[in-house]
Length: 593
Image 1 (tube, one colour):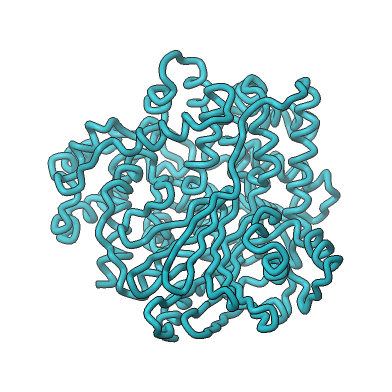
Image 2 (cartoon, rainbow, N blue to C red; image 1 turned 60 degrees about the horizontal axis):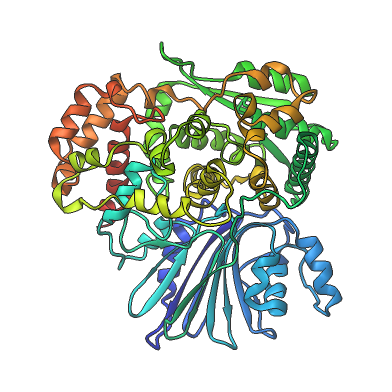
């Protein structure tokens, strides 16, 4: 787990070391254990290391094999690297290190660009092929690891964060109208290749990108998700056993591939609680768990300690519990926003930032429960959409889109208006083949369109800001592929996540299994009042915001006058949406001019 960056020149010159150093400096928090640079002709690579596997210098990066003509920078973890290493050894490859990085290098030498199809894990990497004079970039199937890029006529740059690219200068920071539409319709889940800045794009999950020395580019999607029933029908019992086995294996491999201690982020929900149960089932002793909570509001409790404590007590974990006062939340908001590679409006982005800070003092790797709701239909809107008649897109709009397109027109000023690109993009995704029923299409869209940018991105950003690696077993692609074939009724039953609840019986207290669906609460960013309201008012009334001219003032004033009356369909604060984007632009764009 690390930070990567690089530059490829097309104009016959060599990259400047100072450019790479600026990018590397902005990646330092992702990789506090070491820094490396490598340069050869038109290409330069930079790496920041978080040492998790093979802690020796043999696995330092950039990893270069001059004899093979290959140089690599890699961010992530390859969970099947021991098996791949054995296969490659049988094919005559020798290894000088014991980690997963060199396995990617050897896999490319053996199978070329098709190597990605053999990798199981979370990854974003860039490999320079000296003989072919081409740069090969790849991103994992689910998009757990980020990969951003920018290009001009003379160069191509890539990095793990937008901040690293912005540090180079020469980036077009014009706001992208289509990305803004996604930003405000899909609670900041802006799908690839877009970001809100026109000059920065991101590689789509499950995709590779290849550039040659003169800038010719090609992309290839190497993975797609089928959501169709298996040829041989399975009973509910068989599905439960199959999911249990796949999840057990995912938890086991996500634990085993590390040379450091692994903990669990325990929210108190079913998903993170199951991770604790399965780790205990695997024989893990002295398991460390971590929970966070915030101040209560009259309308909402600020923590779920009742449930996380029950699980920690049930399994006798070494539990760490943190309660954060609102004053600290407000004081630390600027830091959390500075850590965001893209503007993220979810309340739990800030929660994860504050939790990761504390967890990183104890462990370097944690397992987290993200993805289970999107794969096993855990949200209330899944059942509502499935039960309603009418066109699929209309159902999703009613329960998932943050606002109507007409409100977007009311909110943004004329230069930023655009067509309903969000509806068009989502409709295209829902209509893709190889999905049997509406819920199959919906959940596949969540996994392949939404999830990489909400919630996966915020978990990566907020944990890596503290040099903490977060692993997400529910997003193991073998488990995702299996769950996609499951009949919808086995997901929707029991109020959602039926199969997970069934396999959890006997592993978890019934109160945790049968509890109402919870979220990672931070009431102060939902029920905006007091100092939080004044913080947002100052942002939206600032000279920078007014000069930018992004928002129509009448709309801003309406939200400021009654912020708690203006919530999205999934109960997010519309005022926070506006303030967050503006503040992100002030910190990441305005501050670099």
